[in-house]
Length: 406
Image (tube, rainbow, N blue to C red; front, side, top):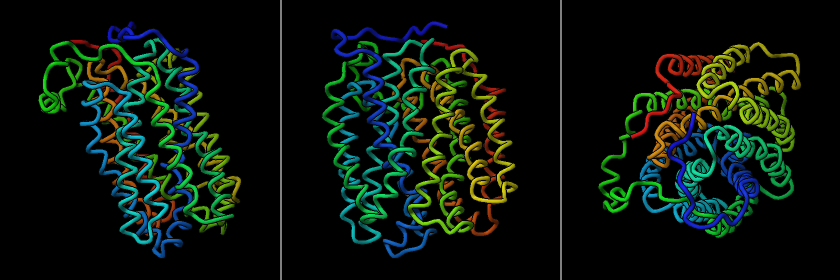
């Protein structure tokens, strides 16, 4: 399949594709650390704030609602350019993370996570859209898959080191470091090479409000595009039911503190890496649509089995490892497929994906701890398995990888 939407650069290439991917990978590792750090250390941060894990989870759930703004940021990036929008969003994340560091109350903490989440909601999907413009379709799984290594490396490097840093200092210190790094990355991204014209001359000349009026218009391939968004959302809901609970699960069953959880997070980061590596190696060969069918089916089986893994910490971590690995393969495969469902509206498509996935994360963050408290591991594992099965059904019956362009 060819990619008819790849534009030409408006300026000569200033850095190779490999170095560009490496730079974005480093950036994503740090920013994903800021996104993931809350989940394994939920009990530690809640104790530091003087609240409960359920109450802290409720506070965290509100950050996902900022994703409703993400499609507007995507439409703006499609019209005005990705680099300035991404740089502004990274700076906004920095403000939020520093606000968390200085917060002295639940209210200050909530303001900080909302600001950081608002920046992340615009930066993440627009970075993927930017890279999609610079990667050929037949190499898209490889390129985006490599960048998604960041999700796993954030656990192996960032989140695990944060646990040791929390043990040496306090839960606040990682937010100071990540917040300052966000400002540095904002400056760096402005120096990245530009994309060529993203929209037509007529679309470029329209006022921004006219583009936003068509925010939910995904073009001629809209049925498959919206099905892709739905399948991705079901998958995300399942994964975050596990993410929000696994740290508390390990702490409850094995009395792990922040340093102990950091050790588990280190090894579980390899689960995320294995999923992304599998996409980068197999996604282009197996096929994008087959990947979003097979991944959720296999993941649902491992989620069903989660409550039956017992006998020690290592066995439980292995069970979580397998479930997370298949989840990561599924979610990265959906990202690749989504990047070409509506080529003329790529920023809009990927920020809509971010908005819907974060709304599902809002639901899983709110429900997950309560389901775990009420029913234990089956309370979140089996609803996650059902959600993954629904993702596979949507992919089988409603998603096409034959791209229709305007």
